Structures are given as structure tokens and as C-alpha cells.
Length: 379
Image (cartoon, rainbow, N blue to C red; front, side):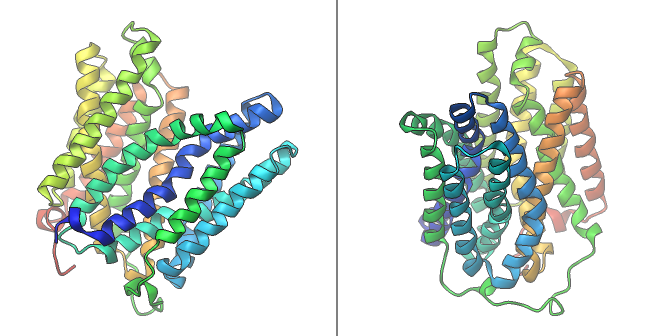
């Protein structure tokens, strides 16, 4: 079956994009809310930090709970709990700062495992032959969600500072409606003894790949302004950096989806190494554009290859927790990269991403190319 006529996939895709949308809306929504109620944006930054911390800390435990319940049953409940958390936060908009900080934990705790749960359902939605293409198309759609979330908040804020939070709750409810209800492999709870998890060392190269994606991307996404200022360009040139990165990422994912094969992740890690080195070297506008284009073009394929290979390794009764861990590791890489941009000279953070990519590639050198470069329909 072609992916583009695969109704179950597009239902899954609609659900996961709606589930992701509140997280992309949250930074601006929290900032506008606290600015309207306290006159300062700083509390919004604190709320977002607490929200992300709650997601990261609880992603794996909540993912493990999803594995026990079955994602098809557990995800609607988690989405409704997340929606309720946004509603409570909106109703308490005028509460003191400590109360808001405590209340933002509610949606953060329940939202941490949503991506892992949806990714687990994808294994039952499409077969192995379509999986690389499905993940690549999803990566392209994610770019639109990342851009559309803040834009939607800016429009909804015209109606009031709590309206974006209400919309975030509505999207969670809509995502809950779209979660597949039909029985599948993951609706059956498997005892842990039936499928034993592999050793951590088996997953480590792929977790390192996920960490590398977050670490290197953050040195671009967080620093477009200093990157163009380093070249003597005005602040208005900063969006060019993000536009090139997003365009290259979409193009890379589209090419990867067209090929429809997993590919060798070491090739994409090599692109990260080359792009990061050129970015750190400060070779003027040609070097900046070329490095960002290479990194962006390799991002979607590397994410897809990592996801496919993790699915092969993760036992069915550990997939929600495993994918949640992968997303958390990637978020940790993004956070560390963002911190390095704020603390270190601008040429140094890309080299940290280069080092991480080289380490991930070295971990994969010992693995047979056939095991990491093709899709097995029996896996």
C-alpha cells in the first residue's frame, strides 16, 4: 500500500501533530500569559523551564505505564489529563507565581510520554517496509507544527491571554479522539518476563545519535542572531538561518521518503561532522549557508534511521518507555547545546556537536552495515 493512500497512517499523523502542537505553543503562550497578569515575561520562562523539566523526568516512568496499559488505551487518558492541566492553568491565571509553578507540573507530567506512545502506535499502523518513509513524512510535517505553533498563539492572544491555553486543551482532546481504538499488538499487556530488554549498550549508539541531533541543532536554532552578527549582517538577516535550516530539513526528509529505505546512519553523522566543522570555522556567508544546509539535510534522515533501528531493538513491552527515553535524550542534547551557546565562544558549541557525532559514528563502526543500513520485513 502507498503511504499517501494509507488512511490509518494519516489518522495517526493527524493525532500526533495535534498532540505535539501544545508543546510548540507553550513557550509563547506562557510568556504572554504571565506578561499580561504580572507585567513581566520572566515568570513565563520559569513556567516553561518547570514544564520541560517535568516532561523529561516523567517521560520514561509514564511511558512504562503506557506499555503496561497499552498505548491505544493509555494515550487518550494522558491527553485528557494534559488538557485538564492546561484548563486548570488558564483558570488560575491570576494566582500567585508559586501556585502557577506548581500547576504547570500537571500538564508537564502527563505530556512527557505522548511522543513515545504515538511512536509506538506507528509500529502497528504501517508495516516495516513503509516505516522509513512514514517517519520522514512525519518529520516534514513536524517542521510545519514547529512554525505554526507560535504563529497560532500570536493570533489567539488577540482574543485574550488565556485563549491560547484553552486552544492547547482543545487540541489535546482532538488528539485523544484520533488515537486508534482498534485492537493491536500493543493493546495486549505483555509480562516483562516474556520479552526481556536488551542491554543498555545495545541502545547506546542510537541514543547517542538522538543526543547529537539535539546538541548540534540547538547551536543553530538558538543562535541565528549571533551567527549573522558574526558576519557583520543586521539582525533582520537572522530569519535566513532558520529558513535555510528548515528548508534543508524538509528537503532531506522528502528525499529520504522518496527513497523509502533506512540508509546508513553513519553517512548522516558524517554530514553532521562536516557541517559542524564548517560552521565552527566561520567561513563567511558561503560557509554558514553550506554548513546549515548540510546539517539540516542530514537531520531528518538521521532521525528516521535512529527511530527505525530503535524499533528493531526495543521489545514490544518496552517501546513506549524506550522511545520516550530517546526523545528525552534528544531534548537533553538540545538543552545542553542551548546552554553552551550562552556560556561559550560562538565557535565552540558546534565542535561539541561534531564530537558527539563522531562518537556515535565510532559506536556504529563495529555494527555490520547490513544490520544498520537496510529494513528487514521480518524484524
